[in-house]
Length: 83
Picture 1 (cartoon, rainbow, N blue to C red):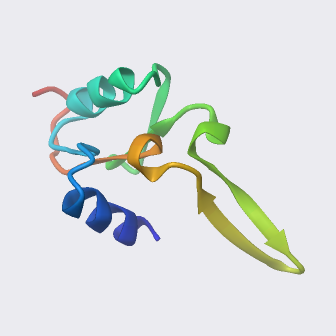
Picture 2 (picture 1 turned 45 degrees about the horizontal axis):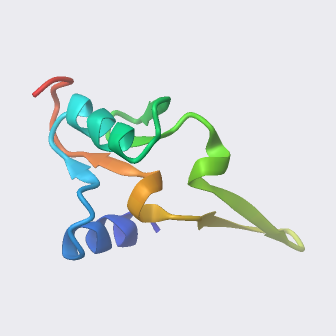
């Protein structure tokens, strides 16, 4: 799901693929998201998980649902925090 989201972000030029963490935070800030969390050094998401999405539970299966991927997730491609 993350790979599909990233591919679509690049294709549709959402601006949610950045080189540095600082650039990703600036992008999220422009969208009104001030508090973010970096996951595995490459995925920047809102600290409030409800801004990102939810988990649907059907029986014993769990399905992730990203509410608004163009503003709820940012991919960091570099290895530096500032750019």
